[in-house]
Length: 388
Image 1: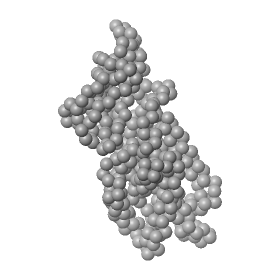
Image 2: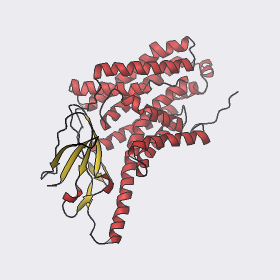
Image 3: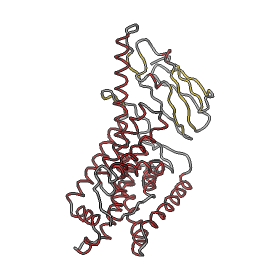
Image 4: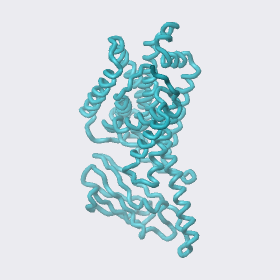
């Protein structure tokens, strides 16, 4: 689409540059440094018969990272006939529901990433009682492993993701074998171990900062895919494929817990470790398997998160609060509860932007968490427990 004017301004509103789209609809504006910029499309320069699909999204806030390019897409649609109030009202209503459909899709996408991370956290809590604040760093570890193999070594991202999942599982096993397992044998309390996990999270975060640096960076593959339209939903092909992989992994892990001997043993350990041990179950072995699986799917979640945004040393920490919200909302210690709770959190975060500013969307999700905890403390799929 030729001749459409685009202007870019800094976060403080100071103009940075202008551009006009070419015959292929592409444009480019160099920016002086990394940061957040406001990109505005001049609607008056759109060709006749074309309008923004979402009229309130003529200005987009875009985060640009050092040494990388950022694609900005404006959704366009055929314009309604001028002078017909009824048609315009119908177009506005259609635009609203199209936006709801788009946000619902984005909510499921975010919810499935949160669910991958939340399932591992929930399994570890269910079998050991540990609230692991270093779980977010498992996501970052997986994303950075994939980045190393993909960008530094030039391995295709799909193979790099598989390798990072294997390494993430080994990292989870190693943590329990040489760290958490030792603390359990020494009789460390759960409160003490939780505080230790906070210290471990800080330690790993700054190790990542030291080796990776403070700026985010994208993967070499699938970085700038053109969007495809499926009904009212517009998304890059990688998003559809990623959601399919995430859903398949969650279903496989859930069925493994229900149908396999290891899964049944894990549920027995979660219900009563002492009784499970007395019936011949190797409790430590089961916990190590859970840590291995948890580390592997956390690494996969990190790769998927890095695919939807840039890889950075804080990415796991930034999503950790939402992971805890999903686990607690669905029911602590329940794998399917983590899935349900995470989907609810992801949907609410995205759909809340219909009525609240984007900056407040996370606050709404945490408000839902507080309300659920007030009226159903065990979570959506959790069960009541008697204390004393």
